[in-house]
Structure formats: C-alpha cells, structure tokens
Image 1 (spheres, rainbow, N blue to C red):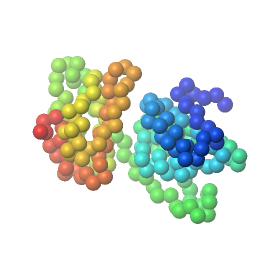
Image 2 (cartoon, rainbow, N blue to C red):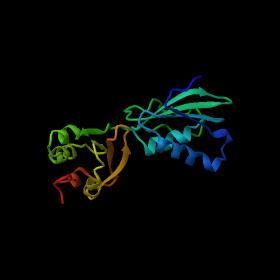
Image 3 (cartoon, rainbow, N blue to C red):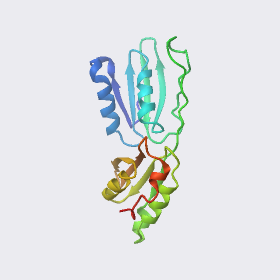
Image 4 (cartoon, helix red, strand yellow):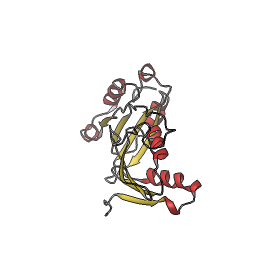
Length: 195
C-alpha cells in the first residue's frame, strides 16, 4: 500500500507504551491542514479515536485501512470534517464498551479578511458580525495576511481560546474556539472595536 504524499506513518508497535500517545499528538500538532497520520498498531486504537473525538471534534477524519487480528492500521486526516468517517457501534469490539454517544459536529465559520485588507479596508465590522452570528460551540476561523495578535487578547476576554497556523503562502489561519463555559451572550461586543 502506498502512502498519500501527506501521510506521516507512525508504527507504534516499536514505541514504548508511555510514549505512544505523546508521539501521535506531537505529530498531529505538526501536521499541515489535509495532512494525515498513518497509524499502525497491534490492537484496535479505538481509545485514541475517543480522545480525538473529545479534543478535536470536527477536525479529523478516521479511516480504518486494516482491522486486525494481528495488525490494525488507520489513517487520521487533519482538517474540517463535519463527519469523522467512523462512529463506534455499541458492543462490536468488546462486551464492556458503552454505547457510542453521538457527537454534534458544528462546522467552523470561516472569515477571510485578506480581500478586505487588500482593498484598504478594516476587517473589524466583519469580525464583529462573524462573532455575533456564531452558534453555541461554533469556532471562528480567520484567514489573515499577518498574525492577528491583538485579537487573541480581545477574543480571549470574551471566552475564546485560539489555535494558530502559519500557512505555506505566508498567510495566517487562526481558529478561535469558544471555551466550554462561554455563552453566546458573552460574545456580544467582542472583536476589533471591543476594548
């Protein structure tokens, strides 16, 4: 089987157990958008699926390529995926497994401010509008020609964390993620004009 150009193979069978998840997550964080981990294991990596579902909801696609009994292989792709590609079925891989809980995937709202800035305008109104239209649990992705550092503090005060990626074309992709205790009301007045 040939790997896609963006596949990063990890064979965890030769990695000490305590180092497996850190190795996988370090690789995941370093992956570009549309990159993938090609994971090989000697058992079903379903616990890893649950961790991805909890931490990166809507940001990964899980595809079993081989399902035992000696070798398990899964491709975990990085990117915006409303559907993770795999949903565990209760009782299919162990009698002690609880029923799967459906995960509501809310796609990110993306705002590309590069055309606004290229035209000599200010993106503040567009950012304010985008923040005000977010639904609970939805993140805001801003594409900018520079790292929008002031927004980290401004949106941080409104209950957003952020994840930043410097893109190959020199642009920046920043995903502002609502914290679990943030509500839509706490986002009112967030953005460029907020002090």
